[in-house]
Image 1 (spheres, helix red, strand yellow):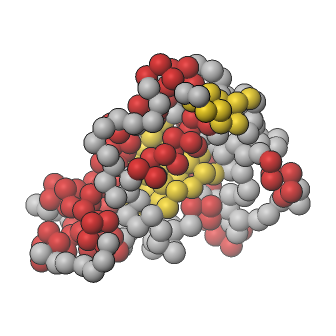
Image 2: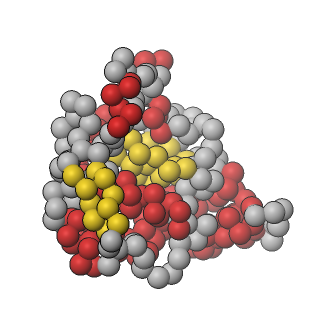
Length: 247
């Protein structure tokens, strides 16, 4: 699931046009990418546009609510669910692991329809399809925040660590899938503490950097102040989301 080495998607001029178009602030109307027109959904029902910092604060508040009252954070369907059929304007995007114990809508406070744009795969990695998904969320839907969310006891990370320490092999496509995690494991192998946990955090931070390096779309929005990309770590035991390298 390694990201392609070349920068892809929109060219620099297109990126700056999108970043300055007001799309991130929730403007309604189509986005032109080359000769293609992608329809922007506009702001969600009763949801004001958020800055990247406001979106991050919202996720932090939601996780605190989940930790203190998890029973109140079941994601609920609004009574006007049909109204969302023709629009969406998520205020945050989460790249998380496919692990069944890490549902972003729940751990960030019981978020409902139209609030978060989610991409999930084993190890929260950034392959071509995932990068394209994140670009769509940021450039077309106007999401101002991407969180790369690793978690404790991640099976994909554990497997990569076993490759490093035991020269382990795995069947089918599992081996190639976890290849992008191995450099993170090698980087923290001699670091004190839990090897798998350290690798999880390092891998999430490397994925953040990979997104900026591989996508001129995302890096252009970041440079324009329209997007923030951060790494985070979810603890399965406590339910807490810790932001790695973010205040």
